[in-house]
Image 1 (cartoon, rainbow, N blue to C red):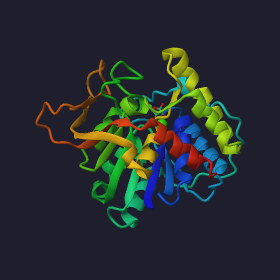
Image 2: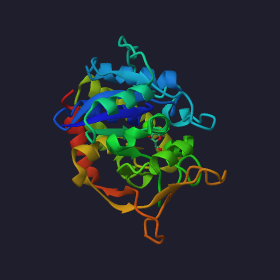
Image 3: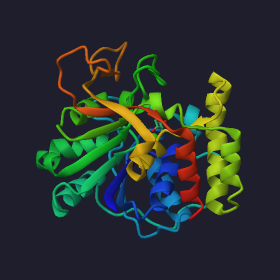
Image 4: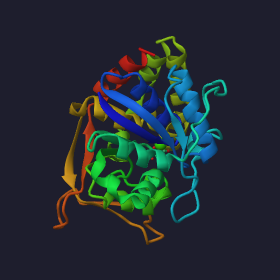
Length: 311
Ligand code: BDR
Ligand code: CA
């Protein structure tokens, strides 16, 4: 199994991604979870991460709280999508597990220095603040990261928080800019692909009929989360953005994309946080990311449901 650290801001779709990873020990070994402010403020994303670990019975996973605000801007949150707690939908008990002491950024640095170089993959499911702060504080870790697989950005599908920006990148464009310029091998799951991973009603039923606490919680989470996309956009169900990152690590054959240049807009108020993705190769700028454009949605949901059934 590949060693991963999940950097996250749960968020129902983050929660499903964490569950999928914890259910897949033969593919991914979750070394730890680092929490960041994003969908909701840091105390809630940290608490939600603990709730999800307990739901999965994974009480030995170290969970760290990280940055409580973006590098150079005020925090923007998304309660309008995820609810006041960030995990609205299921009724889940308060966690008994505690956060590890210490800061997520220090945990990232120490782990990347302790593990053999090139053996740890960072799965980034929220704003990139923790990862960029770690790179700024300890530039030597850039060479030690095997890969960053992140959910963020958009090209054809453009924005979900502004007309041109995707939420994770918009919240901390400065951090995203640092990550995209780091030289690290990057795989991007933009809205173009995550908006094809829709929890239609038969897919939601498939979670519910697992008839386990995890199956019911995931069905309740995706029911809540979908009300936003269904009522606002008439979509067929909730887009499962963040689980695409974990599915890619388990079965990359489900996805296709292009190696392209991606730059981040960090100055214009109008297009702040836009991922300027050279999909058609119209510049001479070198490729710095594998930008995913398509997925086998049925294959993705079959894999996800099969994995959740194990918990
Ligand atoms: C991303 O933003 C958050 O709302 C989701 O958890 C996902 O990571 C989608 O734009
Ligand atoms: Ca997220």
